[in-house]
Image 1 (cartoon, one colour):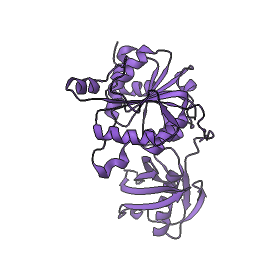
Image 2 (cartoon, rainbow, N blue to C red):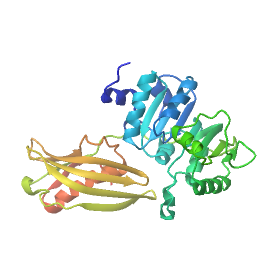
Image 3 (cartoon, rainbow, N blue to C red):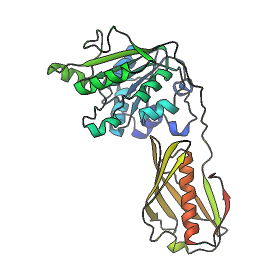
Image 4 (cartoon, rainbow, N blue to C red):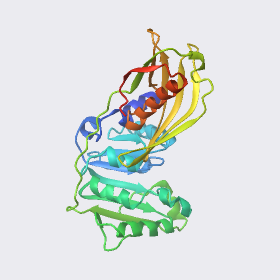
Length: 340
């Protein structure tokens, strides 16, 4: 089978989750119904592909931050001709919170996630109380999560987290086991076993009596923009602009907006490189400042980064408009949909 071009692989296997309503609709994404199975951090993709081969009736979804890992998986999927696997690039905790309905996931696999061994980095570990609570809410009744690690101290951490919650219960008579009959080992797992490193497995299921939160639908909103009118010097609008940041709070969530760099094209329009971090969710994107035919200026999102128009992104557009007004107080807002 000929390898697909990267652009075609992205269209075929990657879920454009920032452009879709949340929570996602698996039936629309896969074109059929089936039990939903997640692997969080699929690495080289071998485990995910093998599971998808063995269970063609299921819908498999790999969550991974690494773009390189995603590209390697695309090649595997095309070579094997698998149609029941999709990929999301993003953070697992945020995705569980927003992209999946409660009571919707059959199984979750977490194979050898980063143990973050330094104590000052323990807050970066995936397995935390809040994350396990999310798992309990998103799994179906009796749905399972399987966690594997070869890092002894992290295994103790996981034990403490799992034993300190009530949404999940062990499928065994103890917190962890060192063998799983019938388990398909990952490449990393085989290497650890061959060198005598013990593996810790945690197989826990959701209790049927778990209290589930309501489904919160988040529609994709219109793209933010601001129209300004009034006299200004286009050439000096951002000529000496330095990096700048703003810190805000929205519904108890810390929101950080950063302006990193400014660019100007041959037509004289400005492009500002931005970042908005809303809790655990970060987006990098561009904001354009364009001269309109009527002499005014349009402040809007650029296509770079394909940002989702969240509250933080809207505020970033508003902050850029404010910077222009600070430099040129005679300019006024004619239209705006950025809200507060």
